[in-house]
Amino acid sequence: MLSHRQAAILRMVHKSGSLSVAAIAEAFPVSRETLRKELVSLESSGYLRRRYGAVEFADSEASRQWLSAEQRLTSSQRKEKILELIKGRRNVRISALAARLKVSGITVRSDLQALERAGLAVRKHGSVSPIAAGEGGAEAAAPDSFPPTARVLGEHALLRISPGDTIYLGSGEIPRYIAAFLPADANIAVATDDLDILAMLRRRRYASPIHLLPGRVRSDSPTIAVENAQSAYAKLAIGKAFLAISSYADGTYYMESPEAAANAAEAARNAAALYFVLESVMLDKRGKHAFPYRDFRDKVQEILIDDSVDQSVIDYLFPRRDPVVIQGADFSYKRGRRQRYRIGFLVDRDRGFFIQEVYNSVLDAVAEHGNVSLEIRETDRGFYSTIKNVDVLLNENPDLIINFSLCAESLSYIGDKCRARGIKLMTIDLQDRESVYFGADNALAGALAANNTIQYIQEQWKGRLDHIVVFARRGIDPITNLRVMSVVERIQAEICCSSPEPEVIEWDTPNEAPREALLKFLLDVPRSDKVLFITFNLPHILGSYELITQHRDARDTLIVGQNFNEQVQELMRRPDSPILGCVHYSPERYGKQVLDIALRMLSGERVDPVNYTAHTWISRESVLR
Image (cartoon, rainbow, N blue to C red):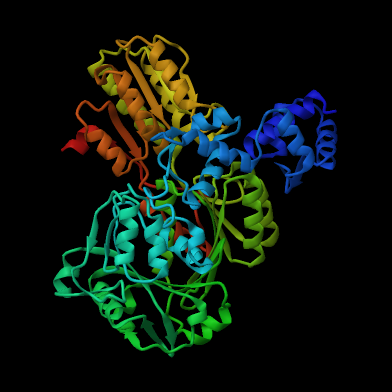
């Protein structure tokens, strides 16, 4: 029989998927020895397993019996229940699924990722929709329908694509994988001369522009022989071209057909950046249709190869200046021209706008420096995943590690490990005593938002404010406390608010249902009250906007955001938009500054321990101009 405390611990861990021992200790004010005995008992009984200071829910007969008695679900049962709940519905909020299934939003997102990869669901901002067979192209979007190498290289290539890009996808298995998993609504224009890629995008009902290049096609090939090629490619303003190489030998790259080679050359001539993808089994093999690589060498950002080949083979086959990347399922190794420095990059496996922009900017900055090689490990933000991956990086003996994992609980572990091994450490957006910091000045960000909000309230609302609503996590996140709560404190010091305490909606906290909490607030507050909403990041503002505007008049409502992208810009352009403005951190510029600091650290120069990105207040008026 489980004690009440043991049962409570199980419920906490099951809801969160994984918890640090420190987090459990905060919830149970007992001695360390008492808590240790409880965890040892649960582990020996098969309910939990402990790894690197984190506690995970174990998949065992004992845990399954407990779940059944608690009317909770196993992972596979949860996925089946999710499909049942979303069937026949256009959009279902992730928070609603989490509340219904009695698990955290993180756990639901993990389940949805598996369902999305299986071609059974599609995620949007904070919600999920089913994909019906024959409607959304489930067959085309199932990763298992692609060879393992195509999946690994295709996933890596997708990371190089940002919202607003115009890309070219040539013929081949890996470009088809990219087409299968491109975000459908991120304004990524696709140019292609491959009929299979066109059919795949159409089955997915791809929402962004698709450009099919004109020409002739043979009945035995999906590749169009583009006519009037120069003008056809030139007018597209291609930013990034992804070219599948069929084989490579003696410094020559080969394509699978004459049409593919000719089209790839024309795309390369008119593209700003080139990415090659090549399976390792096709190395050192001659083909028939050569691609003029030397004409475009300076445009090539990466030559992407799977990890069935090691570094020594790459060094033997490829010239030193070629930017070869060896890509595994959970790591990347990019060869620098001289490899003077080796940098480990720890980054969240998060496809959100901000992290992706920072990620790409770091990769772009490294690509400009021939004396740097980058070893990448992606984490799931949890404590166990983060320290597991940093241990792998440390075993590669890098000269410096850049930590962009955003797992605050792992900071001391990473700092202590790097210090013990004499490895320099830099962190992005989370400060730690053992590292050099680059990122937001959260106090300044709060001041920018507060000063502009105070001015508006004093001028437009005559100093009246009835409610402050904060979308963040209360009390446990130092970034939130500085960036958002400093806005609240400054406003409260200048403006007399009718409600003395702000309403905090915990948007990122496991097991909370933020949209339901927001709806309750909107229904309880008189429509004529003056209400200020302060959002911590992009998902907050994107996830709350429609609900707020549905229930509130813009004349009595203000939304102040942190960070800015094209989607927020579109919301600000709407008539009567209540968004006053956003503090912007320019994530697309992080990489150059991060690498500059890293190189100065590596060369032995004195580096300030704290370094800030530029901060900009982007108002609705400036967007409308």
